[in-house]
Every structure is written in structure tokens, then in C-alpha cells.
Amino acid sequence: MTSSESPFNSTDLTPATWVVAAGRPAHEQGSPVNASVVMSSTFVSQGVPDGVAPAYMRAGTPAWEPLEELISGLERASEPATLFASGMGALSAALHLVRVGGTVVAPKHSYNTMLSLAESLEAQGRLRLECVDVADDEATARAIEGLSTGDMLWLETPTNPMLEICDLRALSAAAHERGALVVADNTLATPLAQRPLELGVDVVVHSLTKYFAGHSDLLMGAAVTSDPELQQRIRTHRTLHGAITNGWDAYLALRGARTMSLRVERAQENAAELARRLEADPRVAWVRHPSLASHPGHELAARQMTGFGSIVAWAPRGDDGTASRTTSDTFVSRVRLWTPATSLGGVESTIERRRRHGNEPTSVPEELIRLSVGVEEVDDLWRDLDQAFGG
Ligand SMILES: *Cc1c(COP(=O)(O)O)cnc(C)c1O
Image 1: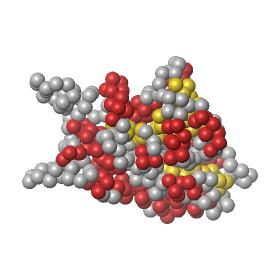
Image 2: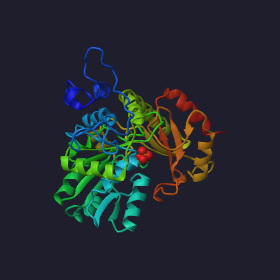
Image 3: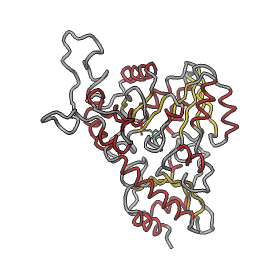
Image 4: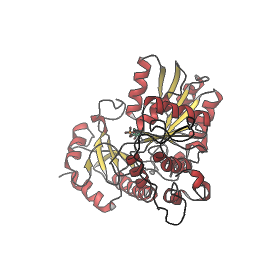
């Protein structure tokens, strides 16, 4: 149901309560507790002007509204979010906000398929991509200096899978001085841990496939902004490209989001504990997690975020004491409880050597193992990692 039916708004409630309460039907005698599953491609629309009521599903359906309200409230946006068929659908709509021929400055360790998309658009002459090390403040500042009106600063913090942290407020302000738009991929942090719009970002994008839906059973994305004109451009892109999700998946993702706060909290605790144990283990070559004091972005993350996320990057040592691709592959082949699979943010813990993907940037170390820590009991997760070292 639409936001106008909710008896409260997101600023009245803590995020943990908002994800449970948002997007439900009004409390009327006999009304259902849950939003309805709407499965209809077309709607009765006799004599109604375009855009007043749902008419055809490509342009809009009540099926999306509860989740769009929930996401928008979490990000504290003044406009409803826009759902997409996948995270990449949302990222693509946001990337197309850059002017034709404009420059996009992006982290060199942005999500790999975002980089593939930007490279493909660059090859077509649609935009120019400039990758920077966002952990290097001076290099990033120099790249932003070169932007002008209609260009774009693309941010991701923490990055996936290198977990670099950048300063959303400072970088957004610098990009706005140049007249550039700022987009942030907030998939890894989730709005429960970080709200980029409040720090000056113009558009936030999400892969809802991950923590929002949370059960590794569907793909979905969202773009969120408080700027009505940007929201309209994003929605027009969705309609014209047909990048829409369906009523059933929207229901499943909403159902997943109800427990998001519990899941994210537990997964973050597990991840910080595993990162701590790995760092103390002589069989480990290196570990990265923003919760660790050894992480170069730890203090910034502690200021900017209310949680450190549940992705851990690390590498085991081989027999000769050094990390390598083969040692990491052997490690991954030995896990039993952890699922050797890509993707992240599900209730189940997953593990992969990230460079097995051909489009992963080559500056990501060959041996890097990415853990997506789930909600299992941490000692069970640890015992499985412990036996996977072998010997
Ligand atoms: C998975 C992911 C995406 C893409 O989302 P899909 O739903 O798989 O299309 C984008 N950004 C980040 C950070 C991701 O982890």
C-alpha cells in the first residue's frame, strides 16, 4: 500500500522497527497484515489519464510500492525508491544520468560488473570512465578537480571485495563544487549501517538481491533519491528499458526485508569475530575487515557507519608461508558448511576466491578469498574454516 496510508513516517521510528512496520496495509477491521501479492500485467483504466492510476505494469504496479516505501524510508529519501529487475538494472539507470560524453570517476575496485558496464558504454562513446584509488585522498581529489557540470562521481564504500572506505561527505561536497552528480552503491553497507543521502550523495543504488532480500532466492535492485527530477529520469529509464521486477519477487523481497535488521546485526557480529580470529591466526597471510584497527579505513568507517558490514577479505598461507592462488583454491575446496558460491548477503555463509571471475580488476590480489558471513552460529563457521586449513 502507498506511504500515504502509513500512520507514521520513517523518522518517527528506528530503522530496526521501520523494516518491520513499513509498507503494510492500514489497520482497518479485517484488513490483511501483509501487503498483497499483485499479479496483473494490466489494470482497469477506462477514461483515466496516463499516470494517474496504474494502467500497464511496465510503467508501474501497486506490487512495487510497499518495498519502494520501505527502502526510501531507510535511506531517509523524500521520494519513493525505484525497484529494478536486478542490482545491475538500478546501477545502469543511475550511470545513464551522466551527460552524453561526460566523465565518470569511479573506484578502481568498484563492483566488477559496474566496471564492465561503464567500459562497454565508454567503448560506445557514451561516457569516459576514470578509475581512481578511493583510499588515496589526493588522487581522488585530483580526479574530482577535473569534473564539470553533468559529469559523475561514482562511489562505493566499502568497495567489493577490497573493502576500501571513502569519505562520502567530503567527496560529495567536492564533486558538487564542480557541478557533478554523485551516486553511491550502498549494497555492502546497507542503509542500516550507512545513509549516503544524508551525507550529500544524490542517488543511492542497491542490489536488493543481497541483504534486503537476504535468502539467495531472487535478483532485484533499487535506486533512491530525494530529487524529484532525478527520480523521474530514473523511472523513465526503467520504463523505456523494461528493467522491471514482478509482483511475486517484490513480495518475496519485502518478506526478506522484514528480518533484515536482525540478519545484518548477527552477520556483522559474526564477521567481526571471524576477522579477529583470522587476524590472530599464524596460518593466515592477511585479513581485511573495517572493524579491525589494522584496516586503513577503520577510523573513517567508525565515524561514517554504524556497523562494519559482513564481508571479509583475506588469504591463507601456503606451506612455504606465502599466500597464493593455489593455496586459496585448495582452502575453498575443503569447506563443508560454507557454500563455495558467488553473491553475498544471504543467511548462509558463502566463500569464493574472487579472481576466478574474469572481469575482476587485476589489482585485486589473486589469492583474495571473499567471505560473505551469514547468520549461523559463529563457532560452527570457525570450526569449518579451521579444518579447511588442512594438515
Ligand atoms: C551484487 C552487486 C551488484 C549487482 O547486483 P545484481 O542484483 O547481482 O544485479 C551491484 N553492486 C554490488 C556492490 C553488488 O554486490
